[in-house]
Image 1 (cartoon, rainbow, N blue to C red):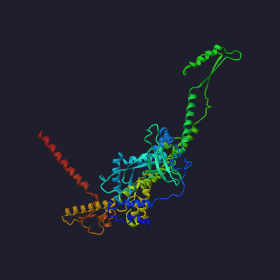
Image 2: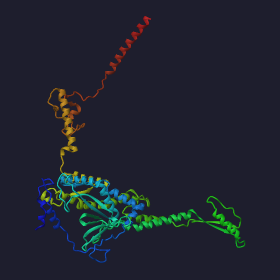
Image 3: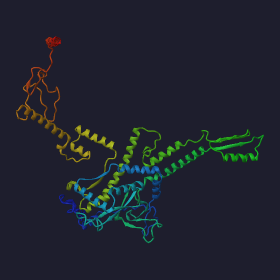
Image 4: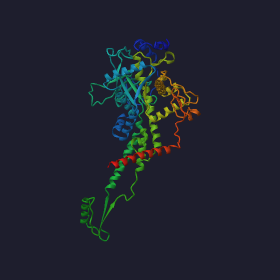
Length: 551
């Protein structure tokens, strides 16, 4: 029987709902058996020196307890882990797929898991990432339950009798792995402290099918991933030792040593003088002084400018710690050696690239270990070939861009390529992360054009109504050199569609004027004004004479 016989979903009608596409349990079992991977290479059993029939659980090669103590006690390590976590989840995430029905189904399953787990799903993911940053390992156990009464559609579990209803984490520092000689995990055990748990309870054990092991930088043949913090612990200890030495140096210089010399060769000190001097030094106050006879000489022993300058050593070990943590010194609040904006921006980009690489691995782990199983339970096919069956059901856990400045530059570059006719609109939208299908009538240019056309038509109707024509259209100019009306999507601009004649004798819908509205100089206007003023003055004089006669 060919492997394709175990893939009936290759020919499933995409118009069916995911409950109609659910695989039968015998098909799922056959598919799992057919796709079982056989490992022929031997695994590296670093802590087991012999094999026997008893289950021997392997301990990690690294001291995870020490790593956890370093994160909890050292400020630089703590701040670096916080920086990783903050940038990792800075812009959020989303589920993307070619099939909107698959996305809706996953969101529905996540809603049910949040109810069962009694915590937000994103909070669970943040805790997983925290374990990966600290230990480069995270162990997730699947919790199963009966959802038939609550979930609206039928679910077909890939393994076991019940579907997945939630996930929970095992403390990484307590996990032990039992593998066969071919490096395949058989079971996982949580090794608890016997002083805190009753011996009758024992240590919980899970089979390999119930545990999801996420890891970064796992060496070939090893069971555990390699934490990157393991390289920086010695540098952190050296830095703290240097700081302690500098503290002792400051303490010694802050409280100087007194050299009290009594007597000379000609006049040796008397025993009672030495005892008295010891009492005086013991009672000496920092702001006090000594009044001594000529035979007594007190000298303060300090650095006198000859103390060791440890600042360069301190900066060196700070840089080693920052480099070992994978961040720049300014990310930890260190301002040593100066720096400029260009350098800090390049260091920021380097940190973003490191975070993006972790996000890429994390996304693929979630897709493979969580999303695929949930999709199979709902009857979807996350491994179908979209070239044969149309849209793919595969769903991706996608992080949004964390470097907003770089994102803006990339988007502007794509827009420039589209404006320069190097790519099409569909290619530009796909490269920007948008759907290629677009309603052009809803774009900004189309809406602005429609508004301009509506404004032009409204103006024309108003002018026609004022003239009483009722045609709804503005009349055309009577001559070819008149002012031309703006076309659809355009606006009228001065002096760009006028003829020569229109500049001298303006023309509008009422016809051509006799002059271009220019105020002309009239030589007779002064005589007219003088005559009017003289007439007004005569009237005033006559009124004055009349008033005098009356008096």
